[in-house]
Amino acid sequence: MAKLGTGSVWGEVVPRRAGASSADVMLHPPGAEQTTGMRTTGAVGAPRVLVVDDEEDIRESLRSVLELEGFQVLTAENGRAAWTTLTSAPRPAVILLDLMMPVMNGGEFLAALRADAERQGIPVVVLTAFADRAGGLGADVVMEKPVDPEALFRVVHRLAQRGAR
Image (cartoon, rainbow, N blue to C red; front, side, top):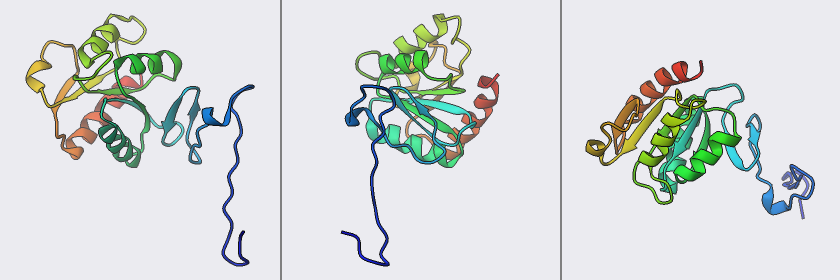
């Protein structure tokens, strides 16, 4: 029960589509773009970055710092989920990709991306602890984990201009 002068908190569930359950609904902050089946965060109209990493802490950390830099951010926990995102969401300007992941690893994802005529031009930054294994995969940039945030921002801003074309 709310007390006078202390404010109130309430929730509302609005399904996105007919037949959607409340479990299917995600709440999005004001100004966030909603896409079916995934969470996109950040300012509408800002360049999109797809972050692909099997470690949730890394995905969420990258999401947070990239949002602060003004990017919209989509996330995926492996290459297969990233591919699903690419085929069902607006095109990202840049993809940040880990190599060592279950289901579909970064190398497999990158090979599929470069073989796809519609998506092959999306710039990819490989973020990995194994930079020596990333040579020859077709990434635009390889950065070794842990990544310097300022260096990452410079690379993502530069590539986002190219990827937005």
